[in-house]
Length: 91
Image 1 (tube, rainbow, N blue to C red):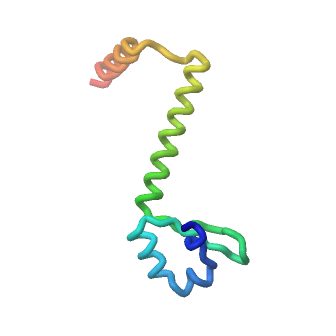
Image 2: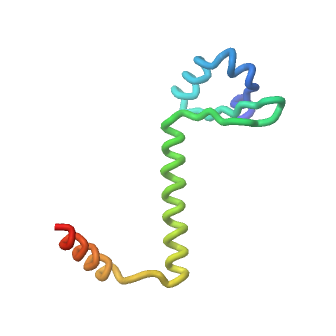
Image 3: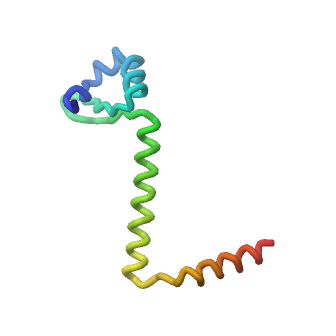
């Protein structure tokens, strides 16, 4: 439940090792507040990496959609021909 995943910084300070273990073991995200205001998020590394990969894919999709919209595309065969040419130049 999200309301259970919000803790004040004082709780985090006094229970840091058990919070980290819980977040890591259960792939949880914890919101830490300071003076009643959300300040930081504690997240396990696997969830963080997965989020970053998802954001990277979304960025690639957005760039691709923009290129398509602006007509910056070429046929697949031309792309492969260009790649083969680059590979031959490298060798």
